[in-house]
Image (cartoon, rainbow, N blue to C red):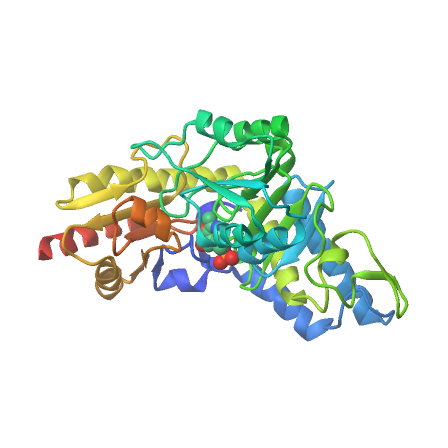
Amino acid sequence: MKLKDCIADFQISRYLHYMDNAATSLVPEPVIAAMNEYDRQYRANVGRGMHRLTRVATQKYQDAHDLVSNFIGGKEGTTVFTKNTTEAINMVAAGLDWQSGDRIVTTIFEHHSNLLPWLRLRQKGVELVVIRPDEAGIFDIEEFEEAITANTKLVAVSHASNVLGTVQPMREIADICKTQGAYFLVDGAQSVPHFPVDARRIGCDFLCFSGHKMLGPTGTGVLWMRDSLISPLILGGGTVEDVTTEFYSLTGGYQRFEGGTPNISGAIGLGQAVKYLENLGMDAIFRHEQELTERLLKGLPDIENITIYGPQDMKNRIGIVSFTIDRIHPHEIAYLLDERAAILVRSGDHCCIPLMKSLGLQNGTVRASFYMYNTQEEVDLLLETIEEIARIV
Ligand SMILES: Cc1ncc(COP(=O)(O)O)c(C=O)c1O
């Protein structure tokens, strides 16, 4: 399918200009249809029993895992379905065996979901080191070389920033982690939906991302692991091989980490979302978003009183653009964009308060974030409306 033909699959796009894709994406009709089909035609629990509906549901649930594993080049690892990126990261924080004196290395760019779980581990005597970028917002790889020491147990870094749109050098960081024997967790919430990501090629141990940011339903996310590297957070139905009243042994595979009845229709929807993305082609999606971003970045500096955060060239960046206008609160800008032109963007701290503080921003930024259904015309409308709003002050 061509990108321009997919717009018809997103009903909201017909009457609103949705540019809040970094928060959650829209969902195409085939994903909605796949979820409805489960509820209408073969609704049953999975991995339990032998009747006809459970056999179909179990196969489709397994297929969804396989589709997602293949999508991220993670066939040989374990692909666990979670409810979002946040849950995936918390599962790693709860599931590794921490000792006092262990070190975790992360960056100031992180979403709270990739910071709070590590901050909490300080109660166990774990040291947290936070790397900061230079003035231009670029991390020096030498900073990682210095910070990742022999006692570093984990390095947790977002592949792409949800505020600045910058993409970090994952392979280089992975190499340093390997040399020092540290686990490497990649927060792929903003990368996996937007360009081809291959967990094996990166060389990470954990890759966490959200299904709802990549055309899947809300309540879906993924924790991919190179191996079964952690102990499961939740035990119960579906996770066991054998149990007595004194003892239990756990099953292998993703089932070990997915205790209780999962979000079955959500998983099936996520599988369908991955098929949809593959059908469009991740390279084509990335190229399209790059074109939109370049157009926006070209037009924004002409607007008076505007400040853009993050790189203004197209090197190592995705389709997320943050900006402020002097003397207008970001929430007011977002409200006016909606009222005047039905443009929906995010405003505020974007769950990155430490980054906002380091940028000296009390009220955060306005953030436009694109996906495959956004158009050049929408970017032009965004630029015109921002210009109008900037003239108010
Ligand atoms: C980089 C990054 N990490 C983690 C998250 C958390 O994702 P979720 O709310 O799906 O858990 C987000 C959400 O915006 C994000 O952008």
